[in-house]
Image (cartoon, rainbow, N blue to C red; front, side, top):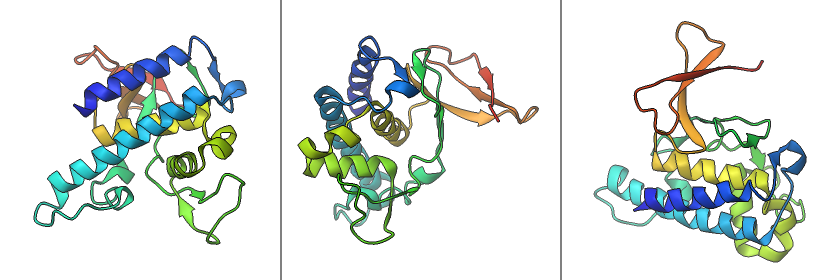
Length: 196
Protein backbone atom coordinates (compact mmCIF):
# COMPACT_ATOMS: atom_id res chain seq x y z
CA UNK A 1 0.00 0.00 0.00
CA UNK A 2 2.68 2.53 1.02
CA UNK A 3 4.81 1.76 -2.04
CA UNK A 4 1.87 2.48 -4.36
CA UNK A 5 1.33 5.84 -2.64
CA UNK A 6 5.06 6.55 -3.02
CA UNK A 7 4.83 5.88 -6.77
CA UNK A 8 1.93 8.32 -7.08
CA UNK A 9 3.80 11.01 -5.15
CA UNK A 10 6.95 10.40 -7.18
CA UNK A 11 4.95 10.83 -10.41
CA UNK A 12 3.79 14.23 -9.12
CA UNK A 13 7.40 15.22 -8.35
CA UNK A 14 8.43 14.19 -11.87
CA UNK A 15 5.62 16.33 -13.27
CA UNK A 16 7.01 19.35 -11.39
CA UNK A 17 10.22 19.00 -13.43
CA UNK A 18 8.23 19.95 -16.53
CA UNK A 19 7.30 23.22 -14.85
CA UNK A 20 10.48 24.03 -12.88
CA UNK A 21 14.03 23.08 -13.74
CA UNK A 22 15.47 20.94 -10.92
CA UNK A 23 18.85 22.66 -10.59
CA UNK A 24 20.89 24.69 -8.11
CA UNK A 25 19.48 28.00 -9.38
CA UNK A 26 15.94 26.79 -8.72
CA UNK A 27 16.36 24.81 -5.49
CA UNK A 28 14.81 27.60 -3.39
CA UNK A 29 11.75 27.94 -5.64
CA UNK A 30 8.67 27.45 -3.48
CA UNK A 31 4.99 26.99 -4.19
CA UNK A 32 1.77 25.92 -2.55
CA UNK A 33 1.90 22.74 -4.62
CA UNK A 34 5.40 21.83 -3.40
CA UNK A 35 4.53 22.59 0.23
CA UNK A 36 1.30 20.59 0.09
CA UNK A 37 3.09 17.69 -1.60
CA UNK A 38 5.67 17.68 1.19
CA UNK A 39 2.95 17.50 3.84
CA UNK A 40 1.52 14.45 2.08
CA UNK A 41 4.99 12.88 2.00
CA UNK A 42 5.50 13.57 5.72
CA UNK A 43 2.11 12.05 6.55
CA UNK A 44 3.09 8.88 4.72
CA UNK A 45 6.57 8.92 6.24
CA UNK A 46 5.18 9.10 9.76
CA UNK A 47 2.76 6.23 9.05
CA UNK A 48 5.49 4.08 7.45
CA UNK A 49 7.93 4.61 10.32
CA UNK A 50 5.35 3.77 12.99
CA UNK A 51 4.06 0.76 11.07
CA UNK A 52 7.54 -0.71 10.52
CA UNK A 53 8.53 0.00 14.11
CA UNK A 54 5.48 -1.75 15.55
CA UNK A 55 5.88 -4.66 13.13
CA UNK A 56 9.67 -5.17 13.22
CA UNK A 57 10.95 -3.72 16.50
CA UNK A 58 8.32 -3.26 19.16
CA UNK A 59 6.28 -6.42 18.80
CA UNK A 60 5.42 -6.91 22.48
CA UNK A 61 4.61 -3.29 23.35
CA UNK A 62 1.97 -1.86 21.03
CA UNK A 63 2.39 1.67 22.40
CA UNK A 64 2.54 4.00 19.39
CA UNK A 65 5.85 5.87 19.37
CA UNK A 66 6.58 9.32 18.03
CA UNK A 67 7.89 8.83 14.50
CA UNK A 68 11.38 10.12 15.32
CA UNK A 69 11.71 7.43 18.02
CA UNK A 70 11.53 4.82 15.24
CA UNK A 71 14.55 5.97 13.22
CA UNK A 72 17.44 4.48 15.22
CA UNK A 73 15.75 1.14 16.08
CA UNK A 74 15.01 0.68 12.35
CA UNK A 75 18.65 1.46 11.46
CA UNK A 76 17.70 4.21 9.03
CA UNK A 77 20.68 6.37 9.98
CA UNK A 78 22.87 3.83 8.12
CA UNK A 79 20.91 3.92 4.85
CA UNK A 80 22.08 5.79 1.75
CA UNK A 81 20.61 6.39 -1.68
CA UNK A 82 21.51 8.34 -4.79
CA UNK A 83 19.60 10.25 -7.45
CA UNK A 84 20.08 8.95 -10.98
CA UNK A 85 17.12 10.74 -12.59
CA UNK A 86 18.20 12.58 -15.75
CA UNK A 87 16.14 15.71 -14.96
CA UNK A 88 17.75 16.23 -11.53
CA UNK A 89 20.59 18.77 -11.54
CA UNK A 90 21.02 19.70 -7.88
CA UNK A 91 24.54 19.34 -6.50
CA UNK A 92 23.38 16.89 -3.83
CA UNK A 93 23.25 13.49 -5.52
CA UNK A 94 23.98 11.25 -2.52
CA UNK A 95 21.34 11.26 0.20
CA UNK A 96 23.43 9.62 2.91
CA UNK A 97 22.55 11.97 5.77
CA UNK A 98 18.75 11.99 5.62
CA UNK A 99 18.37 10.22 8.98
CA UNK A 100 21.29 11.93 10.70
CA UNK A 101 20.70 15.08 12.71
CA UNK A 102 22.86 17.53 10.78
CA UNK A 103 21.10 20.89 11.19
CA UNK A 104 19.95 23.09 14.02
CA UNK A 105 16.27 22.87 14.83
CA UNK A 106 14.86 26.02 13.26
CA UNK A 107 11.54 27.78 13.26
CA UNK A 108 10.27 29.56 10.13
CA UNK A 109 11.88 32.80 11.30
CA UNK A 110 15.32 31.16 11.54
CA UNK A 111 15.34 31.06 15.35
CA UNK A 112 16.62 27.94 17.12
CA UNK A 113 14.07 27.32 19.91
CA UNK A 114 16.21 25.33 22.38
CA UNK A 115 19.77 26.52 21.95
CA UNK A 116 21.81 23.97 20.00
CA UNK A 117 19.04 21.42 19.53
CA UNK A 118 19.95 19.35 16.44
CA UNK A 119 17.40 18.02 13.98
CA UNK A 120 16.95 16.05 10.77
CA UNK A 121 16.85 18.42 7.79
CA UNK A 122 13.54 17.00 6.56
CA UNK A 123 12.04 17.35 10.05
CA UNK A 124 12.69 21.10 10.14
CA UNK A 125 10.55 21.38 7.02
CA UNK A 126 7.90 19.00 8.36
CA UNK A 127 7.41 20.73 11.70
CA UNK A 128 7.41 24.22 10.22
CA UNK A 129 5.06 23.45 7.34
CA UNK A 130 2.74 21.49 9.62
CA UNK A 131 2.50 24.16 12.33
CA UNK A 132 2.93 27.35 10.32
CA UNK A 133 2.34 26.58 6.65
CA UNK A 134 1.80 30.10 5.36
CA UNK A 135 4.76 31.67 7.19
CA UNK A 136 7.23 28.86 6.52
CA UNK A 137 6.34 28.11 2.88
CA UNK A 138 9.05 30.41 1.45
CA UNK A 139 11.78 28.67 3.45
CA UNK A 140 10.64 25.04 3.56
CA UNK A 141 8.15 24.57 0.72
CA UNK A 142 10.99 24.41 -1.79
CA UNK A 143 12.47 22.05 -4.36
CA UNK A 144 15.42 21.36 -2.05
CA UNK A 145 13.22 20.26 0.86
CA UNK A 146 10.88 18.35 -1.46
CA UNK A 147 13.77 16.04 -2.38
CA UNK A 148 14.83 15.69 1.27
CA UNK A 149 11.27 14.59 2.07
CA UNK A 150 11.01 12.20 -0.87
CA UNK A 151 14.42 10.69 -0.04
CA UNK A 152 13.31 10.14 3.58
CA UNK A 153 10.19 8.29 2.41
CA UNK A 154 12.10 6.23 -0.18
CA UNK A 155 14.62 5.11 2.46
CA UNK A 156 11.92 4.33 5.03
CA UNK A 157 10.06 2.17 2.52
CA UNK A 158 13.29 0.30 1.71
CA UNK A 159 12.60 0.20 -2.03
CA UNK A 160 15.53 -0.90 -4.22
CA UNK A 161 14.95 1.61 -6.99
CA UNK A 162 12.44 4.10 -8.33
CA UNK A 163 12.32 6.51 -11.25
CA UNK A 164 14.39 9.00 -9.21
CA UNK A 165 16.35 7.16 -6.49
CA UNK A 166 18.36 4.00 -6.15
CA UNK A 167 20.22 2.23 -3.39
CA UNK A 168 23.94 2.12 -4.06
CA UNK A 169 27.21 0.68 -2.87
CA UNK A 170 30.85 1.63 -3.37
CA UNK A 171 32.55 -0.50 -6.04
CA UNK A 172 34.90 -2.91 -4.25
CA UNK A 173 37.36 -2.80 -7.17
CA UNK A 174 37.35 0.99 -7.64
CA UNK A 175 36.49 3.26 -4.70
CA UNK A 176 35.92 6.17 -7.10
CA UNK A 177 32.82 4.46 -8.47
CA UNK A 178 29.43 3.62 -7.04
CA UNK A 179 27.21 0.81 -8.26
CA UNK A 180 23.45 1.23 -8.43
CA UNK A 181 20.37 -0.33 -9.99
CA UNK A 182 18.06 1.83 -12.09
CA UNK A 183 14.31 1.18 -12.29
CA UNK A 184 13.61 -1.70 -14.62
CA UNK A 185 17.21 -2.97 -14.62
CA UNK A 186 16.99 -5.53 -11.83
CA UNK A 187 19.73 -7.67 -13.37
CA UNK A 188 21.90 -4.88 -14.77
CA UNK A 189 24.19 -2.90 -12.51
CA UNK A 190 25.13 0.64 -13.55
CA UNK A 191 28.01 2.71 -12.24
CA UNK A 192 29.03 6.35 -12.00
CA UNK A 193 32.19 8.19 -11.05
CA UNK A 194 32.16 9.84 -7.63
CA UNK A 195 32.97 13.56 -7.82
CA UNK A 196 35.68 14.49 -5.34
